[in-house]
Every structure is written in C-alpha cells, then in structure tokens.
Length: 122
Image (cartoon, rainbow, N blue to C red; front, side):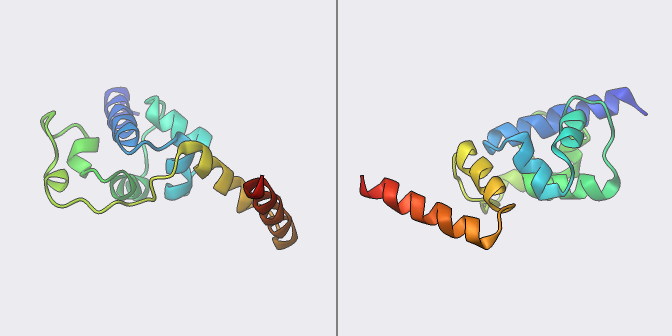
C-alpha cells in the first residue's frame, strides 16, 4: 500500500466531509461501508477501491483529482459550478437518530411517533 497516497486521500476526504458538516457515519452509510472502515480510510490506514473512490467523489462533491492530491489547494472544477446539495442539512444528531430509526420495525416507529407528538404538545 502507498502510505503517502492513502494519507492524501484520507486528508482530502476528511476536509470535504467537514465542509459538508457530515459525520464519518454519514459518509460511511452513503458509500456503503462500515463506519470503522471509513474511519481507517480517513486516517490513511487503507486505500479505497476504485468503486469506493467514485462513491466518495460523488457523496463528498469533490473531483477524483482533489481526493488524489492532483489539484492545487484551490477549489476543484466541480466546486466552481453551481452546487446542488447532495444531502439535507440536518444536524449530525438528527442524522444519527434517523440511522437508528431505520433499523426499527414499523410498530416501534409508530410508538416513537406518538412519543414525539406528546413531547411537542408540552
């Protein structure tokens, strides 16, 4: 493994993730890898597959050149065009809650809906 390249990709991915105000878990979910795997990628402990690199580019709204360290430190060509948000701008704690909710069955979701309504009436 090329440690320098892995560190470059990891640092660029971290910077892009932070710009979008996403958590590592958010990005991991979007690119379909475990949170631990994405964390290792950001720390430069591994190189992504080509498929994962493409997903990262799409989800983090960066060019492959930027992730690979082939561009100057300025904005990429992609970021100079009109940017379309790739995700809602919920706070990280809301996104974490949504990830948890997706794992529940419909009866539990209905129950949580009732609890939420009761809290809003307070």
